[in-house]
Length: 274
Ligand SMILES: NC(=O)c1ccc[n+]([C@@H]2O[C@H](COP(=O)([O-])OP(=O)(O)OC[C@H]3O[C@@H](n4cnc5c(N)ncnc54)[C@H](OP(=O)(O)O)[C@@H]3O)[C@@H](O)[C@H]2O)c1
Image 1 (cartoon, rainbow, N blue to C red):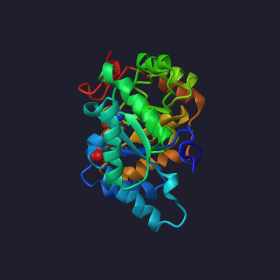
Image 2: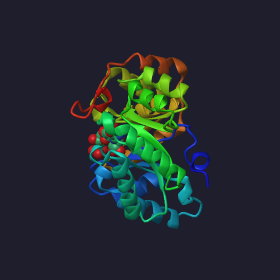
Image 3: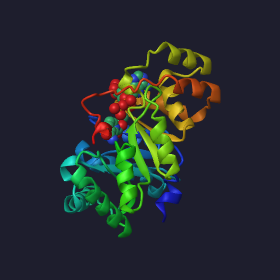
Image 4: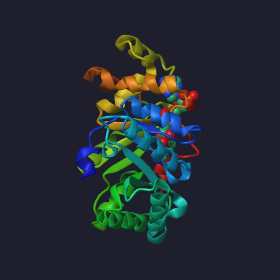
C-alpha cells in the first residue's frame, strides 16, 4: 500500500487535532464518523494510543472505511531531536500504537539548529525502512526548509504551520508549492480569537455558514489542510460542515487581505527561530 496515493495525496483535507483534549477517544471517533480522515497528534500530547484505539474501533465498526484511508500524524518533540533520539522516539510511538509502521511523522519544531537536520536524516531513513509512511516538518519557515534543500536530502511531504485568514503565509505557501511540500494549518480558527470579526460575520451570513466553517473553507480552497480542535461534539459536527460548500475567488482574495500575521499563542511561535 502506498499511503501517498491512498490516503495522503497532497490535496487538502479537513484534519482534527487532539492537543489537550480530555476525552480524546470520543472526539476522534466522532470526527471519523463525520468523514474526517486526518487526525493530528504528537508525542508531547500523550494521546497517540487513544487516537489509534478510536481509529481501530471506528474501522472495525464501519463497513467501508479501511485503516489505510486514515492518517494519524505524530510529531517528534524538541526534547527528542537528533538522529538517535528521533529513531528511539519512533520505536516508542510504534509500541504505543501497536502497529508495524506509523502513517506520518513530523518534526514538531525547528528549535535546535544543530539537531534538526539529524532528526530529518533519521526520518528519511525510517521512511526508507518502511517504518514511517510519510514524513514532514512543522513550524518550518523558508530558511529552515532551505537547510533541507541544501542538504540534498529528500524534501518533507508536509509542513504544518500556524495559518488562518488572519495570518495567510503567502510566501511560505509559494515556497512550499514550488518544492512539492503540502501545507497543514494549525489554529485555523485562531483558537476562537477572531471568530467575531465583522468581515467574517458578513461572509458567514452571505454563504449561510458559520464563521468557523468559513475559516476552515478558506484553507481548503487554498489547498491547505486545516487542523481544528474542539472538545464539543456539536462543534466538531458544525466544523465538518466546511467540507460541502465552496467560496468564490473574489471572497477568497478578499480574505487574504485580512492578513495581520496573527499568532494565536505568542508563547509558541517557533517559526521565527533562527
Ligand atoms: N504543530 C504545532 O506546533 C501545533 C500547534 C498548535 C496546534 N496544533 C494542532 O492544531 C490543532 C488545533 O489547534 P488549536 O486548538 O490551537 O486551534 P483552533 O482549532 O483554531 O482552535 C480551537 C479552539 O476553538 C474553539 N472552537 C472550535 N470549534 C469552534 C466553533 N465551531 N465555534 C466556536 N469555537 C470553536 C475550541 O473550543 P471548544 O473546545 O470549547 O469547542 C478551541 O478552544 C491542535 O489540536 C493540534 O493538533 C499544532
